[in-house]
Amino acid sequence: MNYTVDQFLSVFHRYNEAVWPLQFVVYALGLMIVALMVTRRAGRGRIVAAILALLWAGMSVGFMWTYFTDISGAGRVFAVLFLIGAVALFVEGVVRARLDLRLSGGPRLAIGATMVGYALVVYPLIGALSGHGYPDGPLFGLAPCPTAIFTLGVFLMARRVPLTVAAVPLFWSAIGTTAAFKLGIHEDLGLLVSGVVAGVVLVRAARVAHAAGGREVRTTTGLPHGA
Image (cartoon, rainbow, N blue to C red; front, side, top):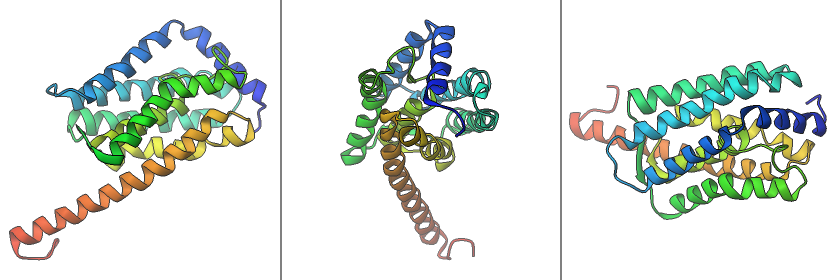
């Protein structure tokens, strides 16, 4: 990380001013996702996946490639990574419809909902209290860190999410957390917590689902899976 906190915040200042009033649009999309999560609307998994894919693709081109590259050459690498994440969301969630957005229930649902609320409300409040409120700070839907927290929260609220669509947000939870420690972006500490918790829960759920699938195959065929 070869840039200062002032350079980092200036990027968000210019970016937020350039895309105004898109902030209202992306927040509306975030609230739409929350509403879809608590309804039984047919095809809601595809809609939510399409919205998330749009947000990640927008950050890839609109933020990483266009603005973040001004202070870091890694911006192009991250732009490609985010685009890969957006494609994974579109393919798995929209084309193949593999996101089961029925509410998961229990602690997993509570933790996921807390992460969503943190990304939408608490994150910008901490930024404002830390002296880099709008337009100098990251915001959900436009900036990677709060959007990653929100995305992982949605995945925890859902019953089933392929690890392929969680890979990029989980990876970014490790990369993006450096801003919390090196630049004093305190709200990004929530990204670290979200990444660790979501990673443990989602990996464990994937292993349980894989084991259950193996047991189903053995019961059906009478042979070990792959025999």
